[in-house]
Image 1 (cartoon, rainbow, N blue to C red):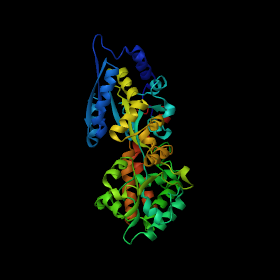
Image 2 (cartoon, rainbow, N blue to C red):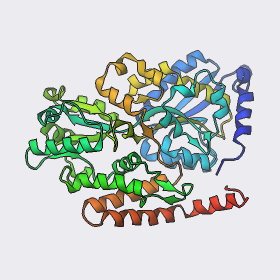
Image 3 (cartoon, rainbow, N blue to C red):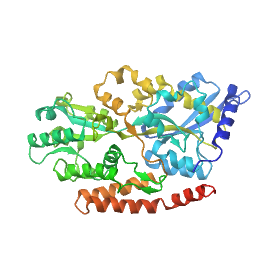
Image 4 (cartoon, helix red, strand yellow):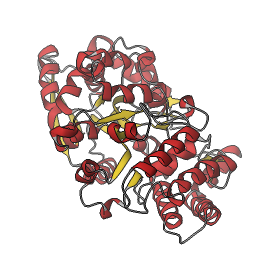
Length: 432
């Protein structure tokens, strides 16, 4: 499944990078295009101005794209050979665009870079960019899930900190349920999200996919262990079978004490500060996820966005220089201050605001314990099927065994072409 000639392409980039000869026009300025998504795409223009001052031979044209339209626009750009020189790319899309041959391999450039230091990146986050042993992107900012909780309610239940193991965590949930008013929940677990059952499966050691990522592993003992634990939180009354659309206002209900715990991501650091009343600003906290055998097994998902260079770029050396600039720890720290997006490099976490924030500290700890979901282009389809099957169990329409068995059948159909490609490659044919 390896994209053709990654080494040759990288060597060509290195040749063009030498002395920046491939990036500079005689007596002129090279223009590169950058596509950014959402809020990040809005503010990256400020960083581009600083880059241009330090690199007067390069001009960066930034185009902001809504996340809702980004995937389709990138695919359309690839088909029409109108992709930008460099862009932000959700790291769950890396495998797809690598398989399409849309983006360039970066291993040799990373090895030769003084600004992109592989050892400074969180291992699980870097791994999201590696497909078939080749790095196709450089992590830009990161996303993972931790626990947000009402520390005052947890204290009233007899706990001064969040337990680190499944067993002890269940004990805390049971204590919360006893001390909280009737009609409230110890934890809000949206029934229409795939992230939580995926996390518990990963924590239990499931590979998620089996047979070289050509079949589902949802009926396997590892995933079933995590899935059974997840479903038990509903069966035992710690969580109600509610979807996000059934929660009128998450922040109001959290303030009212309708639930005490919530698994969510870094964007809610700012939202909780802005939306919770002043009286509760000292009554909420964050914690890394507990694991089946203790905190070391409390892994979470590895999300975020990466920086990629496109094969169709006419100025790949200049594009790589911009990637290097955005990857610098000081620039990542500034990007955090502009957006709230967490940096992908450990050294950038030495920024005083991040280092001094006890609620951000849970994310810093969790980022050392993240795992990527399988890096196949079909992963988003698989995640949707997982969400559908999990919700059916939560609402009592299926048993755990029925859901996981049906999920494996669904995934087998989704990955049918991939099995054919892998079989053909193993027989000596080409996988593309």
